[in-house]
Length: 183
Image (cartoon, rainbow, N blue to C red; front, side, top):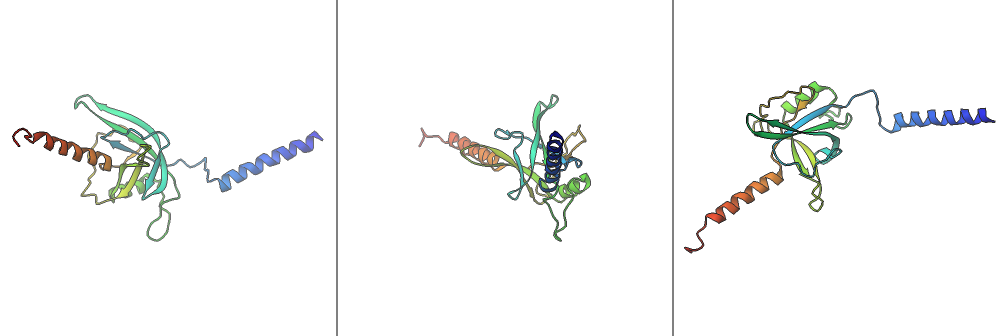
């Protein structure tokens, strides 16, 4: 009978929705917390959907990439908007830290939460955003003219890639200063 088949199909759809909400970890009613990092280096290899990790554990993903150009200073920075998952960070007592609350996220930033670019694989050149806790005095939050107040700002740290490039440039400059003809 068509009525029995219809009830069966509706029941299966309802059961699928209940399973999706229960086991899938999908929450349509809670908005994940977003933050922005202003990188002053190339992000070649970082794309939408790239991972955001803390000590190797995936906490979120990259959801937006923009370039902020300041015409007065003739500078540009890349604004990387990241989204955090809610149930992955706990305190020393094992209690969940509600990173969906902007105040809690700001406390973590004040305690030294910083971001840098990490390499997923040398062969692929894919990048991800690596979060870590460091001494806030060693990497202080630079005052940035924040126009968009929708997101908390996580200060950046120089990545290992940019430090390597800076050291290599310095070595090559020193080699160019050597007077090979006089030797």
